[in-house]
Amino acid sequence: MTEVMDKVQTMQQLINGQWVDSASGRTLAVENPANGQVIANVPASDGEDVDRAVQAAATAFQTWQHTTPQDRSLLMLKLADAIEARGEEIGRLESRNAGKPVGAAIDEVPVVADNLRFFAGAGRVMEGKAANEYMAGHTSIIRREPIGVVASIAPWNYPIMMAGWKIGPALMAGNTVVLKPSARTPLTALVLGEIASEIFPPGVLNVITGSGATVGDPLVAHPKVGMISLTGDTDTGKHIAKVAADRMKRLHLELGGKAPVIVFDDADAAAVIENLKVFSYWNAGQDCTAPCRVITGPKVYDNFVADLAAAVSTIKWGDPAEGDDIEMGSLIAGAQADKVEGMVDRARSGAEIVAGGHRPSRPGAYFEPTVIAGPDQRSEVVQDEVFGPVVTVQRFTDEDQAIAWANDVRFGLAASVWTGDIGKAMRVAKAIQFGTVWVNDHFTLVSEMPHGGFKESGWGKDQSMYAIEDYTVVKHVMLKI
Ligand code: NAD
Image 1 (cartoon, rainbow, N blue to C red):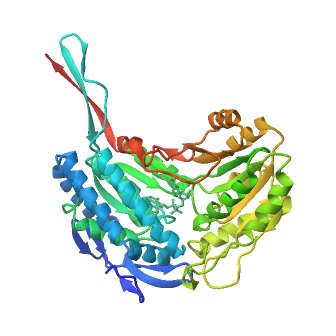
Image 2: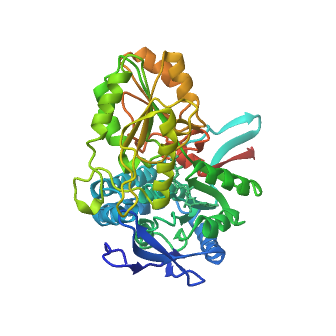
């Protein structure tokens, strides 16, 4: 089932350790966005499938919650090894399903394995307050309990990586999971399910496919789902939060971003440009932390714009199947390319397009690597998530304005500060409202450190001990002694 596909294949989904079609028998076509061709059909599930998957997860939870952290850890380490062993196959499949360069897609797999290994260890060393006699004659202890069935809803931009980030902490905390990948990119999540089904007991991890409307909505509303973990669009997060509120379900929301890159006049501008040339256009800019909103000092602005435009114009983009030297692949779908084109076109009146700016006329969902100089702070292209290969550059007058502009968006996921002055770097890092702040760098994340947003970028953290804590609930047990 999981060999790299040369022809259209029909795949099944994982419920209670079994590979099954959707209850209705309907299927959903999955495309390669780099050429628009259908590469697979997967189950088009609905409420009936959701109910079967949630019931399976709820039954499995009765046993799974009583396994020891060591038991769970040993299985999680096996999962990490097995995924890594199939890294090339998974990466190639991901490349075909998401339009990303093959090398970049293959490189994501060891990152997933590392994350799973981190949580395999983290689940064994969770901490709480000391047990003590806070009232005479009574001993208090803190327990961290699993929540139950977690609905893990993943996006299309890093399908296998986001699936991994979700299941590691959820399962290690003692929960069971129903994983719903994006309808656009379900293929590597199904491979993950296949690997996991050979390691974990039936029902501990279920993977079901279908759209947000037919699978996502009934999954979020299902009475036996105790927590929803979504990585996705901020509007999807708001919708889910409203549905979850009815039953006070726990939420973990990793949502949109609009990362500022504050470049002071004393920064190493060449280093910034080198970083942006790679990471602003990584995954065709479809990254919630992408350095997409450059705010530069008044002295460096002119040279910076010219040098960045020149660097970006050399990015080799195209269908990843054309060769290993393709640096930027396609966007996820024609609809996404339409969205990017619309935002760039609307930006033209108040700013200058100094690199790219066009949607090439060829099959597949492409947009040129683009740089827009001088947009207004209140303009749509500065305020809203483009989620495409587009960088804006603005000129600030002083540090206060740089901070004010950086904060003046509804998102708060990630940011960077570039300067040779360590005091200024620390001042600005404190003043800006983002979950991750890099100094003289932008993009790299590690499993040990938290990733998650302020403001409309969401609630809760991925990665780190904070993530596993998010998948538990604290209980106070008081003993009369
Ligand atoms: P999306 O919100 O369209 O979809 C995400 C998932 O939610 C998909 O599986 C989708 O089917 C599901 N969904 C959609 N409607 C639903 C509903 N009504 N009920 C339940 N589930 C529903 O997001 P996307 O377009 O796949 O991903 C891009 C977005 O994800 C961007 O905004 C990006 O910034 C964000 N993102 C954030 C992070 C982070 O860590 N903060 C990481 C990656 C992506």
